Length: 233
Image (cartoon, rainbow, N blue to C red):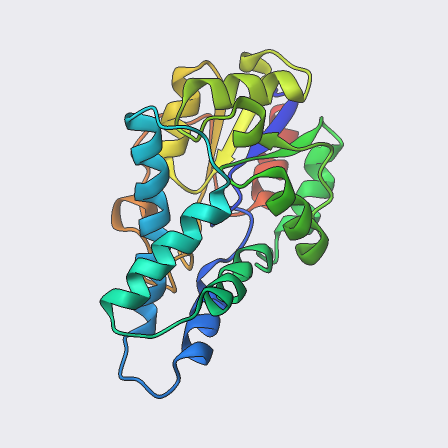
């Protein structure tokens, strides 16, 4: 039984696709754009940006800086004009993402077992704003700002476990992205794969909708995760 829980946030805890698509479509309503794909490209561009910083050992910078630059390049590519102020306003949607319906109840149940904390590439300011918006009752904050490195850097998982006061083997990483789980598992953390088939606007991520690793728990929701752990106790 784990003694603490660490959570991927963008996609696992919160729905990024719906509000981000709405923000883009509201900004450029008159163009003939595939807003579904633009939204996915923005999210995937952020993933590539963080991975590049890890791979090339580049200095740590706030995630919001990267998502804004990815957005700037994406809009320019599609010939959608935007001022710096407009880019900043659009980029603020990352702090206004709703939690999936099962999250509040699931976190309440898991909190009876141990601390719950985000293990996100978002900085503490991002996580605090998102927690206030989405009603996320974290015990503390962990993730990239603790380690000054982005996932999948080993230090991010190890120092996040330390932040919630447990050894790596006593922490459970909860994510809908199996690459995240694989990186956490390599550092000795327990793993829970929570499927989010609607994360990419109902399109899914292909391999992410099938179990590709040996995870400690595979669940359909945070409630299901809590119930499975209760049966194991």
